[in-house]
Amino acid sequence: MSLYRRKDSPYWWIKLPAIRGERGPLQASSGTANKRKAQQVHDQLKAQRWEQDKLGAKPRRTWHEATVKFIEETAHKRSQSKDIAILRWLDPWTGGKYLDEVDRALIDEIKAARLKVGSESTANRYLALIRSILRKAWHEWEWLDRAPKVTLYRENTGRIRSLTRTEFDRLYAELPSHLAAMALFSVATGLRQANVRDLQWAQVDLERRHAWIEAAQHKNGKPHAVPLNATAMGVLMQQLGQHEKNVFVYAGKPIANVSTKAWWLALERAGIKDFRWHDLRHTFATWHRQAGTPTHELRHLGGWKTLAMVERYAHVAPEGLQVAADRLDNLFQSYALATPEGKRN
Image (cartoon, rainbow, N blue to C red; front, side, top):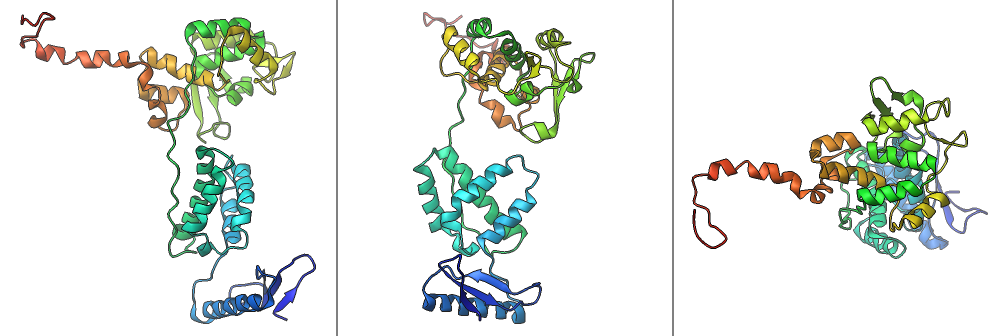
């Protein structure tokens, strides 16, 4: 029987014989408990499959098929678990839909629903995943003749919070020794929390004053070379002999978390508000720009993927461009310049 009921579903189900290229018969939910509507779905699907089998028409793919293929092809992504969580959240809107039914109207509905429970930046991650799947279905898999446009919310440049040298001195004095060492190493190298916390001696060459982060450990997916300045070297020398494998430890054991009660209490005692561990990386970048480090050098030092990510720190050191601005002065020596009193030299 091509239309039947199942005990585990309130809907009518469809069963159709296999066509060319399939290993077995098709079994799919009609998506409705109304038998007349289910029969209509059945007849439409049967006609589509006949055209596909006899005339070579493109099969109508489902959103579920697309997500399964997408997950298989992106198994290398470090954020795949987040993608799966997003797809599960989307299921009330996309479950049982064909790919061509995930249109602009449905996407706008999802966009509005997501914004009610989160920020615009979070909504953008959900929309970006939908866009990626639809584009692959269109350009790579040729499952769609076209994909709807997915418009993201415009985001600001992001939060930048850094410490002054005086503020960092106060914080450093309040931190327990293991966190103080990690914080100083973070500001000296710009490494992210996990890369400092999980750093191993096998990743450090003290003789060459060099450390490295493997691609699988680095956020941008590429290996990152870390030149070690005198401050970073001083921290590492103090850590020698504390653990055979890990650089930073507490009570002889690897550290699992740095944002502990001790961290937050140290911030409170130091009188520092609105500051997270990741902001030590912002501090590293800010101090480098204030010291005159060029954008392209800072990008490599901090392991940023694009120059645009580093340009966020350009405003903190406008005086760093003073030398460049002064280069034209020699060209203007023959011009009479106005004095403050309005007279000319």
